Image (cartoon, rainbow, N blue to C red):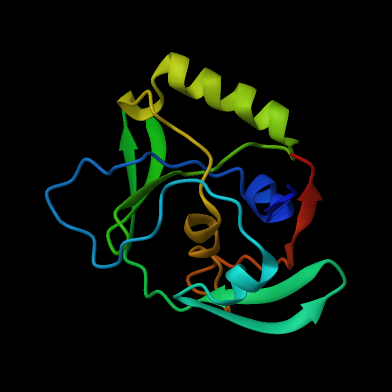
Length: 154
């Protein structure tokens, strides 16, 4: 069975998050944090995302979530906490593009070294990654990339 991934989206972000945020507040929006195979039609049906014009290998989309971000340094490591979803993201991600295998090695290094005091960093699910897409610039942040879906053999 073929698996569908939003390869370019997830790899281009190379942002990472931890499974639960260590915060006293509860998230307003809960996003699926477990991995699953997902088809293009299932991506189109996801909550909190608006699909627009098509692209050769994917589609343009943006999240409808009104985020509440906080930049923070924990043990001198930069993170961004999204109080709306309860997710914590690596602040800058990798300085270069990485394929899946390299990104997993990079994650192993973050976990081995306890980035920001945590050892459970992972790649985001499709829902978590697409929650970051913005429809326009907001405070200088803007991710404007088409979602590219690659077929990966099982």
